[in-house]
Length: 217
Image 1 (cartoon, one colour):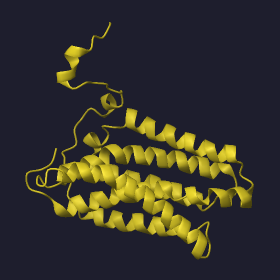
Image 2 (cartoon, one colour):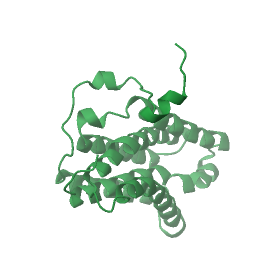
Image 3 (cartoon, one colour):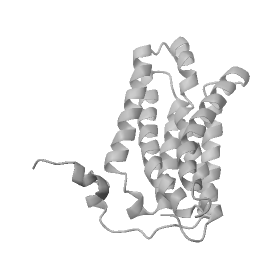
């Protein structure tokens, strides 16, 4: 829930964190053809990386979607940064499909956590007016991050030296810089007990829709 007094610093930093998380997740995609031609990674193996990314993201959303309520938004954001940085480091070691698959799995988990915890941080700290700002930010920022990550990675691969390493080093430094900014941000929630209970998926419907659906016991 957005606070009555907007925290612009926290809002901007959390938005940047969400953008970088999704930028990191898209960075290896433009290099897939280079991986195929250079390291003989098959297209089936490359397709498998997307499956593991999907599994990681869905698992994080199902089982860890409320994690930031118990750890706090800042700690959750730092966890996302650590996962992204470690996955990005793995991509600098790609000579076979395994680092790519593991890295994409970690990025899926990171983006699933970011989609719940960091977006909650954005909503918590967004100004009340204009009313559309928080919803628009959490909707658009992942798409902008994916686009920037893919375009930047492709540009580095085409124009810069060390195409398999340089773009990932830039991402790691960007994540470290955002983590430093996050250090000065204020927490937006008081951590709650009940972490283990939160790991159990919970499905619910808006109250106004419940009368229209009958659930059999």
